[in-house]
Amino acid sequence: MELFWHRRDLRIADNVGLAASSERDATGPVAPVFVLDDDVLAHASDVRVRRLLDGLAALRSRYRARGSDLLVARGDPGDVLPALADGLDADRVVWNRDYSGLARERDARVRRALDDAGTRRETHHDAVGHEPDAIRTNAGDPYSVYSYYWKKWRDRERGAPAPTPEESALAAASRLADATTVRSEAGFEVGVGDLPTPAALGFTDPAVDLPPAGTDAARERLDEFLDDDVFSYETDRDYPGREGTSRLSTYLKYGEIGIREVDAAIERAMAAANDRPEADAVESVEEFRAQLAWRDFYIQVLYHNPEVVTEDYKEYEAGIDWRDDPEEIAAWKRGETGYPIVDAGMRQLREEAYMHNRVRMIVASFLTKDLLADWRHGYDHFRERLADHDTANDSGGWQWAASTGTDAQPYFRIFNPMTQGERYDPDAKYIEAYVPELRGVAADVVHGWHELSPTQRANAAPDYPSPIVDHSERREAALAMFKRARGEDPAA
Image (tube, rainbow, N blue to C red; front, side, top):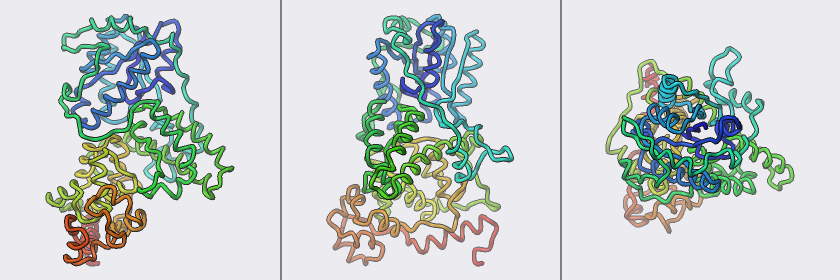
């Protein structure tokens, strides 16, 4: 028997490590296990723990439909996996590689523990199209500019979806039930009973409606998107009031659908694009494929620079003197800045644990360039609230907006929140959906909110706040702040 250790790959299909383990007939069936690691939980949030448990429930159901089950333990994987392998007479532990600093430190401890126990181990490339070391500059360095990375990424062959294990290759549920007798001196337990509640793990159950979890839901969402919306992705993806994006980010974050399966589905959509009526159908499908490359790009940035989670990637000569006004940051978090598109995004985040990508850029720019607040405040808030929080993507996105990251937005290009709202939500439908105070208010009034007098605002929407800052003034302050950081004279 072998153990397969699930982590950010809560699926049976297109799972490279699970497929490799299940194909070794001589070793017997595969016992799948997930370990609720307290070190990982210490960095989690209420909504992500809730979403994780939803994903585990969906994965367990898929195993049970195949006559198997999913072992779930809580404890240090360095204690759990050697003890579980010993208790089940498993001679190998297999898992798919993860690339964050925390994950790599954990995996190193597990490797040492298995070596000490005399248990074989094996890891696989699964989570990304190309591993973090696979694509480098001609000089051999990791890429820091996406456009150059993309050119190599798209031309490199990526693997086909991994085969789904046969039912006979998975350990029978009755065999896995024996694992409930496995205990450790460290106090962990493992079994196939009910999953813990968020409260049992020290978290609250957030009052948000999350989409269904699991591979079936991921495939349904992907199929719906690729049947139609992908062919207008190029033009629709920036408009939050339209169904123009895939909404796959949470499924990819928890690995409920394989990246090769998604890539293969995109290839089929590309083959169909030439027969579509949309003028930019081919370009739209290619632009959607590029999002997979962005995901790989930020993962390789994190892999080679694990400190980007807390430190600026790009150093400024004199350092950035962030303003960090706590009342302004609190208003931003509440969605009460008086800038409608910003507030709509922050309220969507609170209500759905999700935010449209264009709006993520808008609210990030507003925090760092209008409120002059350190990007880490935004990153931490997103990490707390987003169901699809991904360390690589979010640190990369926030540092891009703050002009401190790889291939970042130049410091002098500052989003105008009124212009962004008018351009990407012209009829204010997205804003109305999340800012009820502005429902029924004409779109031109919504987008011109900053220009109204106090009396006009009171007449139009008395419960909606006035802008907490003047964008034009803060734009000049941001330019001066970055010039000082660069060691330049702000007045020059």
